[in-house]
Structures are given as C-alpha cells and as structure tokens.
Amino acid sequence: MEVITLQDDGQAVSLVARLLGDRVRSKPDIVLGLATGRTMERVYRELSRSDVCFSSCRTFNLDEYIGLDASDRNSYRHYMQHHFFSQVDIDPANTAVPDGNANDLKKAAENYELLIENAGGIDTQLLGIGVAGHIGFNEPLSSIMSRTRDKCLTPVTRAQNAGMFGGDATRVPKRALTMGVGTILDARELILLATGSAKAEIVAKAVEGPITSMVSASAIQLHPDCKVIVDEEAAAKLKGREYYDYVFNNEPVWEKYRR
Ligand code: GLP
Image (cartoon, rainbow, N blue to C red; front, side, top):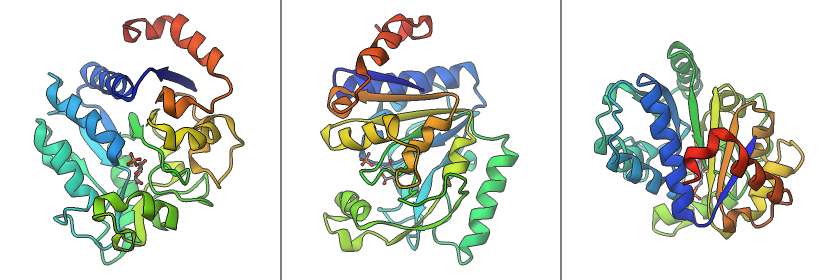
C-alpha cells in the first residue's frame, strides 16, 4: 500500500483524476470499478473536462440502493449518468451498476459477479470510504471474503448519505446491493480517495489499524497494489506520515505526479 498526502482536497482529487486518466490512456479497453459519493463528484468533473477517451472502457459501479428505480434522482445509476456517463464518450452499454430494483436480488448479485468475470475482472477500482468504515456498502461485519450481495445499511451511513435525500436520513433506503469486500479485493489495482477531517479517524483505522470486518476498508491492507490518496485533513490521524511522504517524494514511479 502507498499513502499519498496532498495539501488540499483539490490536489488529492486531481491526482486521482490524473491516475485514472493515465490508466485509460495506457489501456483504452480498461475495466474500471467506479464509486459514488460527494468526494467523487469532482473526480468525474475533472475526468469529463480532460481529453481522455472512454469509448472502449467498461465500468462496474460498486453499489446501488435497493428499491430505487434507475431513473430515481437519488439512485447511484442516476448519479453516474449525471456526473460522468453523460459527460464523456463512454458507450452506455458498457456501464454497469448493480440492479437494486431487481425482483430477485440474489440472482442480480450473482449476475453482477458473472458480468465482472466475463469482462476479465476489474483492472482499477476507485474507492471512497464511509465514516462507518465501509468500502462500497460493506458495512461493519461484512466478511472479507464477501461477494456481491444485499446489505443492511447502518444508521451512521444513512445519516452520512442523508444530504442526497434532502437531509432526511429516514428517506435513505435501508438496504443496498453492493460488491463484496472479496469482489473489491479481486481488482488488480485499488485507488482509495478520502478528503476532509470527518474521514481522518476512519482513514487511520483502515490504513494502520487491525484488519477487521468491523472496518471493511481495512481489508485494503491485504491488496498487493493499493494507493490511498488523502488531503492533509484526512491524513491528520495517520502515525506513519513521515515514511509515507518519504516514499512519495522518492519513488521514481511518482515523479511525474509530484508536480
Ligand atoms: C457512499 C458509497 C461509498 C462511498 C461513500 C463516501 O456511502 N456507497 O462507496 O465511499 O458514499 O461518501 P462521501 O464521498 O460522500 O463521503
């Protein structure tokens, strides 16, 4: 794992957008795993304004609320259409978001896993982190081996995501269909982005704490190619900062991104 701390959230967002852009340029038919949430909105904005061509990409989103129609403005399908898919040249047929409105959720989850497998697996998976420690919607006690399935959301998560529902946590669906922690760990590369002081504690737990199903994001420690990109505020509780900064400032692979 590498942890890169940048001065402010704008720089952290830009680095993630640059990394993703470079991944697509070097492999135009890349399979991307995508994430939602406020943090990602600016990543998609930067990518949309770039000259990156997405026409041969395939994408798989991490999760979707259960019971919301794809056309519902609070659904993650709608979020993706609005913030990204409609802004770039991606083929809509190559974009997948779990079907949270399926009659048979178990089948929808199995199909999603199959779809990812048939696409050759995910090359680069973008991740945010929830204050409850989730990646995707893998709430506490999600098995580190878990695959795509339905999951009950914690009150903390519903409160965190209330902003998208007019500030009313009771309007946030109680359940979601999410890639499992195991599904996420199967991606060939993980890039986790977190900004702001509200994420400082959970970022420290995910990066430096014990690997535990209580903090599903801690499973990223098991991944052989994971980059965590944070701003100063989100990095505030990391104990190993000095070394992480040293690596970023000295590893040749990061040279072009230091400017
Ligand atoms: C939702 C998503 C997560 C995401 C989180 C972060 O809960 N299911 O995948 O990591 O939001 O949200 P924000 O960026 O708004 O803090």
